[in-house]
Length: 235
Image (tube, rainbow, N blue to C red):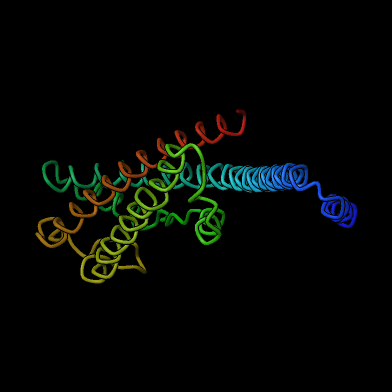
């Protein structure tokens, strides 16, 4: 094709058709420019299509992660609410009623109950950050809520969970002073008047209340992000 156009130009110059040659040259330049623009347009379309496919893969993976996070969070919230109910009753007994047998029963129930720390699935999000997928995600509003969930809500919930575990360990590490692990009995009735014991239980109640509250807020945000992700995938 290039040889064909070159031959035409040579013939025109040989035949001294300078005016026609310049018109032809201009036309050839226009054709080249149009060709470049078409090539760029195709390249941009391919790149846009590639980015869109990457975003779809990311959002589908993210949706699966969030659904698993929600299952885990619901299980942890159930346990935390049960523990909160127990320690709330224990606190009330210590501060007012002071039924020793009931307090002993509640304390055993409290230290024997399971405690789970929340570990969200962050693989898809972390990969999207390192690959730049999240940076190009559209619409921007979706990018913001996803980033906010992982960088704020999850971070805060994990931090509160670690602090909660620390306070719980303070109670458990002090139980030798208050509690016989072999007989599963409080050491004496004087325990319920011990301000250190009461303060530890009260502090644990406060921390557990915060964890439940933050857990519910995070659950609400997960549901919100899931809804927006599904809307984006259905567009």
